Amino acid sequence: MSDFEKEDLEEMDEDLVVVMTDEEGNEYYYREEMIIPVGEKKYAILVALDTEDDCECGHEHEECGCGCDEDVDVYIARIDTDESGEEVYVDPTDEEFEQVRAAYEELMEDEE
Image (cartoon, rainbow, N blue to C red; front, side):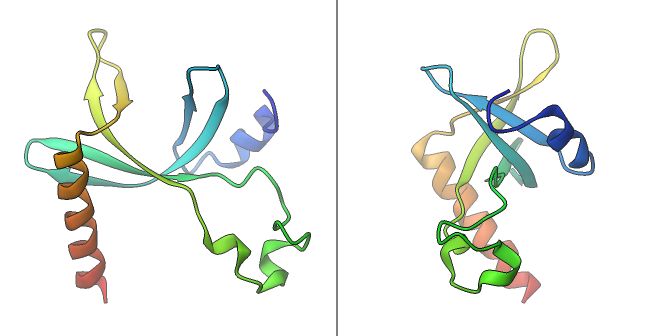
C-alpha cells in the first residue's frame, strides 16, 4: 500500500473503509459516512480519509484552526450487488446524484 499501511486500516475497524482505484491504478481511501436510501436503491456518502496527520499548512488538524482541513473530498456512490453477491460502489447518474444530494440536505435539516 502506498501512503496507507495495513495498520492504519486496522485502526479504523469501526468504520467501513472503501478503496477506490482509478484508471491509472492509483488507490484512494474513503470512509463510509452514511447510507442514504432513495427509492429502491442505496447510496453511500464516502469521505476521503486523511492520509496525512498534518494540514497543508504544516500543523496538526486538531491544533491548527486555519480551516484548511474544511475542504473534504466527498464521493457519492450507488451501492449495487455484483453477480457474486458482493456490494460494489458505482457512479450514480446525474439524476441519481441530484436525488441523493436533495435527500442528504433534507436529512441534515431534520437533524438541526
